[in-house]
Image (cartoon, rainbow, N blue to C red):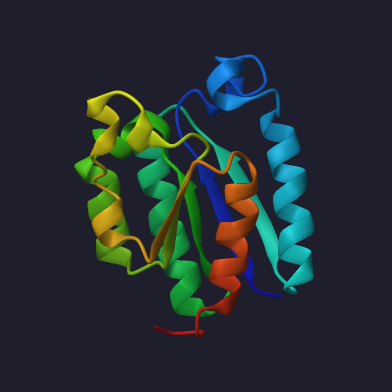
Length: 151
């Protein structure tokens, strides 16, 4: 069974309590459950992870790239949190590994502070889903499921 790697960046471990007016009351555990249900509909497994540390996320992207090359990983759903707007290293890791990436944001980052309008990940992403709350993760998994095995 092919797996979708779902990565979550800094502060996403605080979902459910962090700024509920922006991010809602859904917890990261709820998001994980949603991802598992959606992936199951497409015959995919889920490897769901969160880190507040940029280097750990880079290592996981490298791991995903090896999995894509081996045919065990379908792609990456990534909510990089604030690293979206600051990390060239994460974008370089995606570009270097060739892992198919769907960028996800719970809030509509384009309706927020100007610093959140730029993404280093968008240019290396297959697609971007913003502003649909936790449903964005399910939409991203469905999108990855439609991609050809090697693109």
